[in-house]
Length: 121
Image (cartoon, rainbow, N blue to C red; front, top):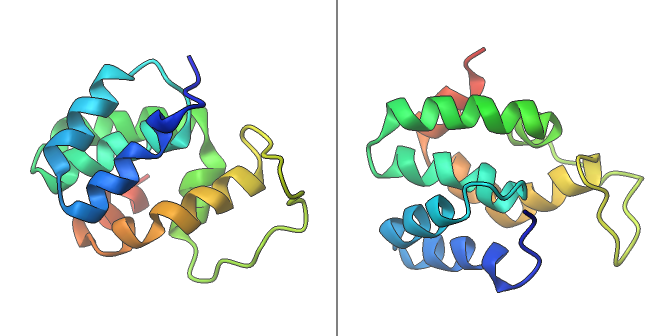
């Protein structure tokens, strides 16, 4: 299932407010969603709430589904991809990974534990 409505924006709003529990609940309810806003933000929220073991396995699954998102999150520099076309996002593409980083990168960077888990191979 792909959430095209407000469902993909809610995790970012809750992260901004520091409401990690709402992020966890929402992402758990949307577990079968393949949007990066769900499959990457769910393990991030679990890490922030101290549930590292479950987060680790979900993060591995997310990386299998959308490997370019993890690659983008690990980068030191984030140049805008040449493939970006205004109004379009290619599923699994560099543009989708970049857009996720734009919206959620600061939450990852602010968590040493999240970045450490992301860097594990």
